[in-house]
Length: 303
Ligand code: FDA
Image 1 (cartoon, rainbow, N blue to C red):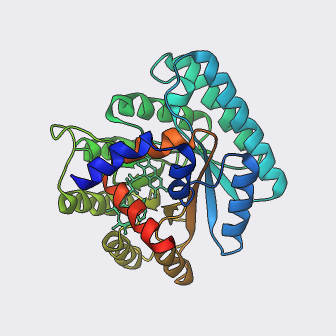
Image 2: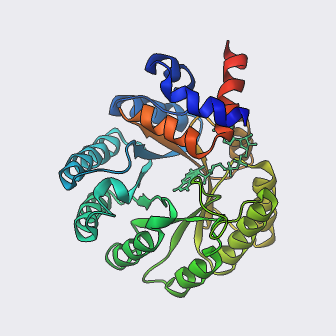
């Protein structure tokens, strides 16, 4: 209740005030900020995936602008020699307005990434987007087998079936590449598991399934219980560098991140940047009021 109250009040506060809390989770407003955050992480042996903030668009013309940002972002990172991949949300390219337009924009971005042997991850958004995002991935995987990946959310009840499907299209010609996360959106209990233990169980079952199918997995979590279980599976299946990586969000659980890097695991951090940070932060808070707790904790920790 308290978390919900804080989460609903924060968007009403002055932007500058909210920034005090949000800055821990966002590299900054500009591409320069993302570049400098990424260099800092690289110095600690951490790879990055870059996200330009902004989700739903109202008009298709806005998608052109988002695409231009991604194209120049890729050039900039590659020219800097930073080992980066790129994460995008199809709804910012009009997924729910016009699938074909979205497809052609995302295709162009992946084509640019391919020029540099890089990689684009299609983030998974709320349940209204899941079928379309799997369809988008399927089509792009055929065209760019080494340059595109998808996200799967462990909290969705449909996920085991989706994984069966994704494993069925996994082959040497079209190697499926999955980021596995719990899922951040508020979904109804009809379609999503609500109990933390049950979500964790489905997460580990999904990871075990993907490892058995020899699918490359980005293990995206800050939950120590899950990273421990993942490490057990990695050992059990004698997996190496080419089989998996851990992934975390910028600013979250840096100690756990460092521990995993020290143990020799590949680590990638999701680095968001952009002017839309206010909407992003407050939306995330509304979607997951638990985050308000971390913000308050940061307030007391940092003054
Ligand atoms: P959980 O929420 O249980 O957190 C575990 C622990 O981590 C907490 O106890 C706390 O210590 C710490 N923690 C978590 N969040 C924190 C915060 N904000 N500040 C401080 N500490 C925090 N979701 C989605 O639906 N689609 C997507 O495409 C993606 N993409 C994505 C990429 C990457 C790289 C990550 C790491 C996550 C995502 N997510 C996502 C978000 C994901 O679904 C999930 O909501 C968050 O990772 C939180 O879940 P955890 O597994 O970390 O567990």
